[in-house]
Image (cartoon, rainbow, N blue to C red; front, side, top):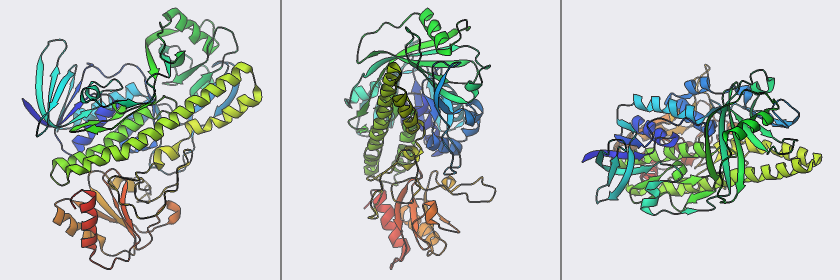
Length: 534
């Protein structure tokens, strides 16, 4: 029996992100993925701002940006065909400087390739492709996992402290532990048709990242066409049937016919790369963990793809869980800390599922307006579609109201999906500010594997308190003094205030200052409560 701290099942973006994080925390792990390669299908497409902030920290931002669409090609066009009449456009989401990076329109196959390269650079884990999970059993000290190589039949047994299920929507791990999914499993049956055709001569393909086709000719259904490289690789997504119907996918000849019709070019040279059929779901696991097993990514939640939050939410699941596992494995935190994973992430999964479903319902209204050729309705829904692709408020503004946070009594201000309002209130992502004139070092760079006390320029000696409280608890706590504190930047703690920021960049505690007792004692109590030690 081979022993390892963490065992990960699934080598998609979520599982590979967990592997990267465990490398950063120097935690040994094994990841198994039943496929012998990363995906060859675009699948999800788009890494949003918070995910790109993590990729920047992990060193994978630059290669992804190089392989993604140009930043000015991230708009959404509503057209009769890709070479025909344009009903309207939603421009790219404006970058207001609220992050050190920006979202990137890039497909999942490329994301997986780059994450795998980065994860394999780490020295603490092993990634085994072409190996499938068979079963697991919990014992008093961990989880016994059995795997098999389907080609050779070789079975191996591992003993891990914790098991991470990153094995997708049909998660075998989730089914074995008996966690149920809540919500509709099949709202519609969809096809993904990935095809090759050179459309580089059309100026619009260098300006738009996605097209909603509302064809005017009979026998041509509505569809979305996603731009994967700005030139010659395209993904058509269309509905085959509502509900849970049994559907036979159309033949390749029909896919070619529809691609030509959607492009408005009858003699277009179309070659099919690959195809898949899938079901739109809106499901959230009834719980994200059971015993020593944790669900991340699609194993925990399934969204409609409208909005692009599935992969992004899964990667952020891993980011939330990794630091908690690291502290518990090191004996620096109580196992009770791990309970905060479900408390914090499940509401976010539900909110993102609701947002995605709203976008799906908008498309239904829009398609009906196109069918009726109702121009006022068409204009209304195209204008409303800005809320689909402009969602930085949802992507950066989510907040943990319970869990490993200590509320300061201020009221939650709600969330507007289209606009992000930075804040240092407990539960939210700490605001981005540049720390130097070169604009290459952000406040977000302070938060990686340690807790950090960020304090105002007139605050007391938090650096000494961080050192002394850290020594008492046996953990490293960093301190950083800001030269200026401006409420317009979301820093409401004041000149004498301070916040404790978790390794995942979320504020855990805030004070405006004025403590009348030892800061070391104050910080010690705060940290003990956060770590579940009190």
